[in-house]
Length: 192
Image (cartoon, rainbow, N blue to C red):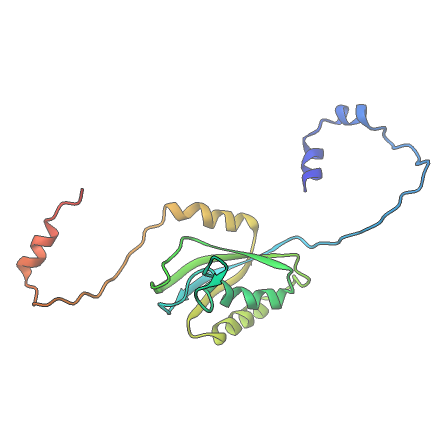
């Protein structure tokens, strides 16, 4: 990628000053010791809901000790890794939630970069089946709108997270009943 970008930036006359065109015939043999073939990353995105109050978004490891048995990242990515036969992955989402917070509603946008996938061509039906496999594997999460996307789409997801609005609901218990004047008093409190 860096070579391509450098070639795109260099002027043709500057290139010709450094290298003859056409190139000279080689006078010695070229010895290749190692060849690596890698596939460009594939990006998969969707939205997830988290129904557990004991499931972190990412693996929770402190001083080498695992604190929770699994994570949203692992529950989703393990199936993507296996299906795409990828060497590794990077999980990202639009924002975060605390471990004890559920993610309901339309879900939180996420994307997974699958590194060096050995399988990369899938139909929409294949992706629907993959989504169903993920959803059937755990009652702690659910994914929707799973799809293959571009790197640019993942960048847009990350850029937009500062502009998003969030709404929270809370269930509150009180020792005494609350009347309308109590609500009005709370609403009149000025936040500094």
